[in-house]
Length: 106
Length: 117
Image (tube, rainbow over all chains, first blue to last red; front, side):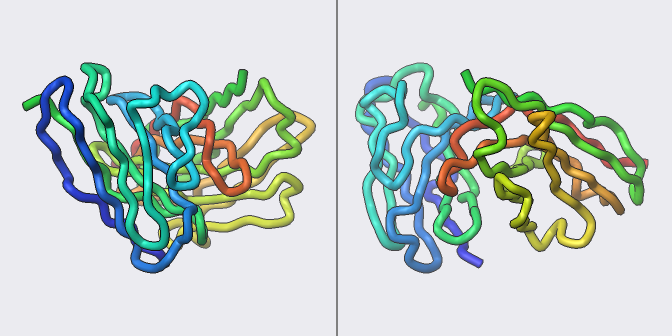
């Protein structure tokens, strides 16, 4: 099974900050990686797919990069609505999620 | 607009059975693979099952294999999850999710299953 490891688990930041979340796969998954945003009590929302493709309707301050085993999600300028939890997920072989990164207000 | 609406959750005793349903609308259900993903309270997301558009192929996570069965009725635009031999650790919100070339793109709002005596 492919394991996904996200870091950090929690990130403290301020509005306007540039933040980066990292996701590492236990083996190469090429570019078959997605990023989701989840707000409390809500379903996850797809932000990025195929490592760097922006889902329709998602603000361009979100971007993804990476391939193989190391990936990043970057929010270029944090907005108040962005303080929530983010998950990476591989879909190269079945489906595995990272443990999540909570972005909180500093 | 893609809509996925889960139902069937509730409180069930350990060892019991429950059947979840997911009603799909806004797209041609019969042409998409579907998944179930769950999230225990305060925890992360766990994929648990997949079914192909024609029901020929199914996959399960090891944590539910042999206890849960995924199925669908394309005529009724519906996805199901039959859950048997339920355990405390199956307590979670269960989401149905649409699959597009293995990408889980759309999610329902979830239904809560609580396994407790």
